[in-house]
Image 1 (cartoon, one colour):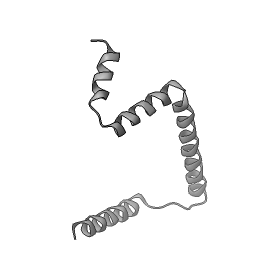
Image 2 (cartoon, one colour):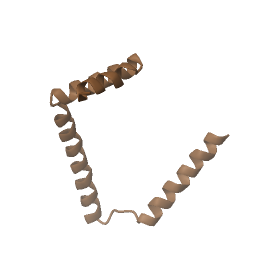
Image 3 (cartoon, rainbow, N blue to C red):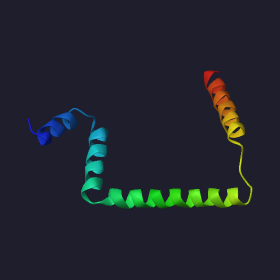
Length: 84
């Protein structure tokens, strides 16, 4: 079985919504839109990194242990709320 036939068979059993998502993704790949999307995300990440570096250079940074401790606390609170 060719790869094309395999893909068609796998997509055929999906719901119409999922089929649409698969076709939209294929279209994205065919039109090189993925590269533009990637470049945009990469530029956003570079900007965030540069902001972090600038803040650190000014002495404005958070201790990693404090940061992760706070994140764990927030996660636990969300889990507690979701369990109620």
